[in-house]
Image 1 (cartoon, rainbow, N blue to C red):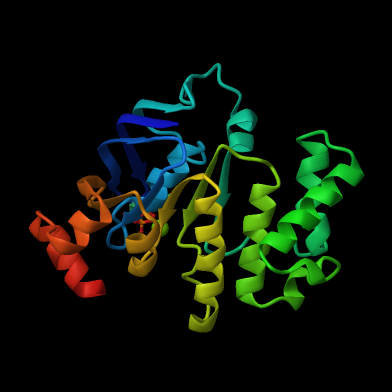
Image 2 (tube, helix red, strand yellow):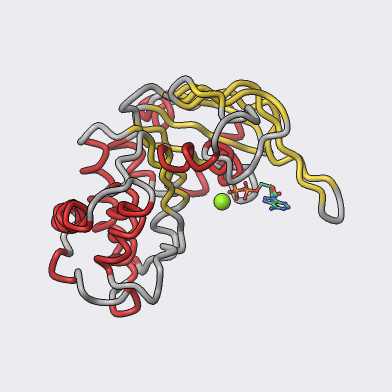
Length: 243
Ligand code: ADP
Ligand code: MG
């Protein structure tokens, strides 16, 4: 479903920052990959390259067989297939919860209003907030807003969902409800790439864990491998700091 081959990404601000350096990774359909690593290690840049929010400088990225770095590839098409959930929810503040879930369905997916509402209500039920369809995002808790954001992504029927630290902005008591929704989405077979510091989630849900440092993938393996006998010293040091 995702094939990343030798990608590089450099940012120039006051000086050159090599955000990604020769990163390669494959994600099969229905797999859940958890990406971990210290701040600044390139996790967000890696995710953002997968839906071309960032354009990799070199290398190849294939999404379901489509070369997304090809100039011929329609960027809007990619974004329809690859959904993204951010740390900061990013809901439309002046639209109700229901409108947040229906707009893109009608505009991008060409669904009728009725169809879009039906799908939206089904998904709101799934994430446990169908009684909040008519309220505005600011009237919801952070955990509820993030569940709406996940439902909104799902409404587009993406092939892949990317999550960039989806629980990092939440009060501790709301983290569990968002992780539970993500677990349900994973069980339903969604292909997911999740950047998170929630090691319980990684252990329970991930098919593969990827550890990044300094723009490179240092180590990858099953959760069992990672949490029982990581090989690299850098992985060990990182895990000892967060576990
Ligand atoms: P992480 O998500 O692991 O914290 P990022 O991918 O956000 O790491 O960042 C990797 C490196 O790239 C960091 O040094 C960061 O400062 C730099 N970087 C990321 N995005 C930009 C940008 N838009 N402009 C300049 N530098 C950036
Ligand atoms: Mg980040």
